[in-house]
Image 1 (cartoon, rainbow, N blue to C red):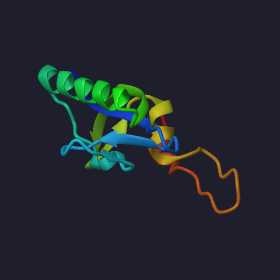
Image 2 (image 1 turned 135 degrees about the horizontal axis):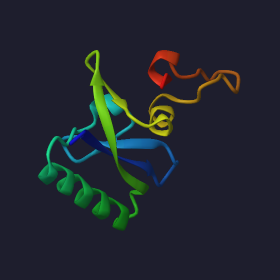
Image 3 (image 1 turned 90 degrees about the horizontal axis):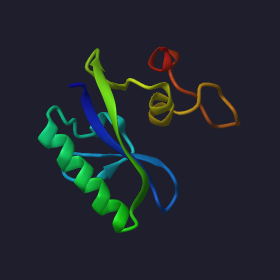
Image 4 (image 1 turned 120 degrees about the vertical axis):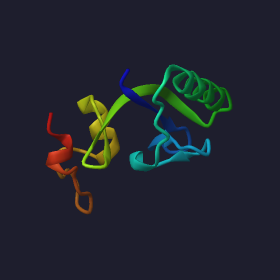
Length: 104
């Protein structure tokens, strides 16, 4: 089984967030709680259902991650973009994701 984390979008501003080990939502993927077995996945899914029902987050998903060089990296490109930002600079003052992190 691949390692998994719980992600969502914060209801107030739409920012991508991840569930941490303390049951709080963090804007940093690297602070996410990593579920490494079925029971842990079930627990984060339940936490996501409760947060959704409480109108804290929306678009709640369990995603697969891998650890590379001591950093968590989502397996899907969509999730890497959500974690690091766009693949190109699109507006003044906004950077873009590290190409090595986004690379498939």
